[in-house]
Structure formats: structure tokens, C-alpha cells
Image (tube, rainbow, N blue to C red):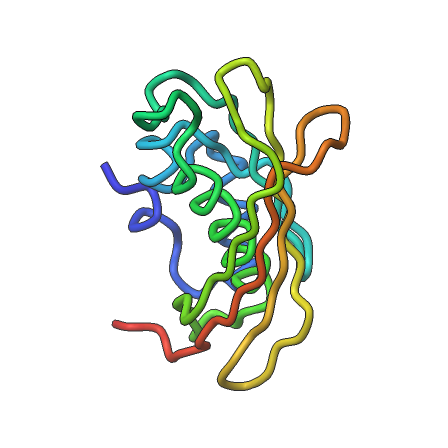
Length: 151
């Protein structure tokens, strides 16, 4: 079941994100990597997750793609929160910096994304990935293309 396809039509981006959170659901990628949208406001989105051994790479730490996905989701949904009912977005560029290794002992991670600026065709966002004590594990900047929603 794709929860995103079940959202009512004609909702703004922020209304869509709130509806997702209210339903207790999450987008399909959240099921795959076990992360949840926990907060959304105009130009802001936050996801939380607890990394596990299933996200490990061969060198014994959480794969960098896990952090990148959380950061991309935070940047994307921050931009999503600023869209009209007729708009959508796609990531054009994501630049990730890794500050500290993540393990299954890291505990809850929170990715917070914020829109830096948004125009008719492009949005720019940034995000951080921190643990519950505020320690920074990764950060990102993103360029997103704002497009007409596919019907």
C-alpha cells in the first residue's frame, strides 16, 4: 500500500506532510529504512530514526547512504512544505558531508531540513543529522527542481 497515493487531492505540500504524520504512516522509503517524519512547518521538516545493524556496510559502520537518505528527505520535505497543491519537486543535487561515523549504538538520530530560498523553478535547502545530545554526524545542502505535479 502506497500511503502517498492515498492522500486527498488539492492539499498544499505542508498539508500533505501533516496528513502523512496524522495518519501514523510514512512514505514507502521510510518503511524500507525505518525512519519517520516527526515534524513539519513552513520551510522545515524533521525525520527521526534509530540506526541498526541492517544498515551496516562491510567496514562495520552504518552505510553513508543511510545518512544521505535522511538528509535528502529532510531537505526535500522542507521544500515540499512550501509547495502549492499543483507543484512537486525533485532533487537535482545533494552534497553530503560526513562528520562522525554512525553505528547501531548511536541511538536516535534526527535529520532537520530547512529551506534557504525557494523560487518558481528552484529551491535550495540545508539539513543536519544529529544525535539526541546534539552531536553532528552529517550535514547536507540540496538544490531541488520545482515542477508542475504529474497527473
